[in-house]
Length: 349
Image (cartoon, rainbow, N blue to C red):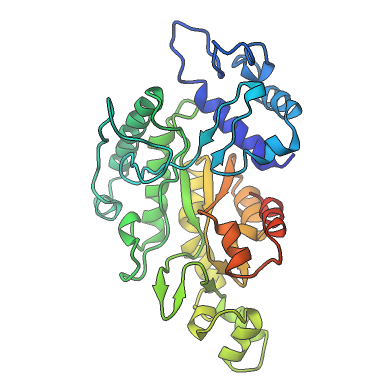
């Protein structure tokens, strides 16, 4: 069974077990559901690995596959309800994602200033405090049945070009500041209760991703090409060499975007590295774009070797919305959707 599913189940176990009242024994499943009442995977007092193994052993392959999308399918025979993974909390709980619904007892949530302005305070204590308030409200909404526990926040991409339409979501252009913000905000969101998560945060979008639509190239087709690699592979013109790397793109600037290996190490990777190693984030999201002609969500060097291997992510990797489908249908990186899904899992998702 892929590590990704084991980690997903572990995150759910860690989170859901916190919602119960102190007057009741901790129980991860619905205590009134006779279907699951006696299953070991529902018993919070058992070791996490034992519970995960028990649940996986009871599930069919089709049921496991159904958990690998944001709208995770229910497994009624085991008493497992469906779950929506997609919620947003960049500077407050948002109703942008389908995982949260405002109304009734929860007409709205606190909206703090845009991240680009809060980051300008250079106040890491403030960033963590904001994260705590946001997760307090997220917890309240979860307890009220109108929100989940997984939030695809923060956005820690480097903001280098003011024309990028999502720059206000980020902490700015400085890798160290962005990294410190990432670690601080994540700690505020997730809490400090050891291996128990208040909510699960997600640092996005990994990596070299800061392009919406420029010169005929959009974020679904952008290839962050390491310039030195491009030039050493061919003695032809830059444009001709670029088309050898990926002939689907029309602009040389899409191929020869000047991202050196040092820039990857010293700039683009820094916020994510700090988010994982210092913030202990539960999740990292890979991006739509390619790096060196390989989609980030299908690249084992980026996901398995770097995030899981070098940085020791103790969590899960999620793709951006339909990015696996994008590198099949729009980037034509694979010939079938099945191959695209397999590449994503083998890469480390």
